[in-house]
Length: 288
Image 1 (cartoon, rainbow, N blue to C red):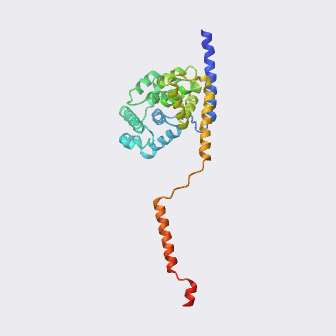
Image 2: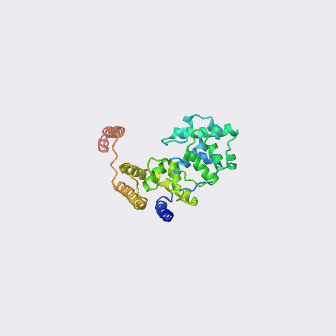
């Protein structure tokens, strides 16, 4: 039995390596490595990143700096005002709640916007203290502990969970934390950032996720095989690219004239006709 388990893990690791190779080839341009930041800023970035693309998270963080003078101004702002940070996000208000609760908790705990005191705690203590922050998601906690305390974790949100289920690396409907815990034994600590980052690129690709979710629903609880993931990715990307090519090759319909355009054209025609009727011909002028 022990020998069988040893043989099974390398097989999954090899399949994961090939899956990551396919994802890297497709999404290399938009993949982002995590930046090293203080703990509070890492928590804020995690709130921005959850169920979002790397580009969206960067946009949200940029808006925090441009819309507010400092963290204290953001802390005393309304949820409506904070929601402007996460404009176009389907969960903008929820992210705004998380952001304000985080700032309020840190300020009221330390009278400063500094959470790096947790770095001197053990992993267990830090997790417990982060658990006291109201509305802070498990993803944000795991992401921060992993990045700031170098703990081997796979911080997954709902979108990553669904993409991993389609790849054959998880089960649809289970919690992201359970999926991440199950994969810790086959994803090495040094590969965790690349693994989560490339899967995020797939999970937040709107065209890809639309197809994957439809296939998950059609499967009706039946699991996907990891061994076929690379071929299914190839088919998925081909389908997306073919659809793009067809859309690009179709001629654009002629623009319809609006009512205002028609009225303007009629007015111009009337003016030209009126001027033409009022202007005497040169021959007539000479005869006179």
